[in-house]
Length: 220
Image (tube, rainbow, N blue to C red; front, side, top):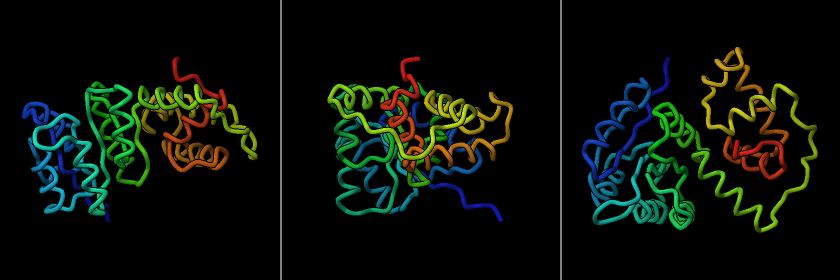
């Protein structure tokens, strides 16, 4: 029996942008957009009424910004993952979005496959960060001298390092499997092993920690 589709509320004040995002989300086959909104107030109403799994929000919208909607969702304890999809990568926006309680921050210039993957990642309860945003966060932590100790577990194997570097580039499991000529199940196994060795719970945390340890270079 197949899993039910991921139910999404999509909010963006540009109708053409919403149409494009909706099309490739639903083309994935396991995502359905249950409501659209052209402003933040309508987005919040749709989230309350539809109770989606994930809300995909732009930052700059009339009536309420995506940041304000995220704060309201968290203050009302609505059980929905929030993915911010925006053209803005400025540090103040990144900080405000994450502090508001969003589960993901992806730029609009990401590929459709990356955005679909981000919806899945947020739905699974993990953090989804655009590689460019992850680089900013790592740079900020490193400049503050926040470097973690080496993990107690053994270092990743050569194949796990191959997978880790592709994860850091933002590739999906399917794309990693194709590039390394291995199965998606094998990729999932390597990622699970990396999570254990790095003591993390998400792809984003794995990349950030690996970058801090100097195992991957996010500028490559």
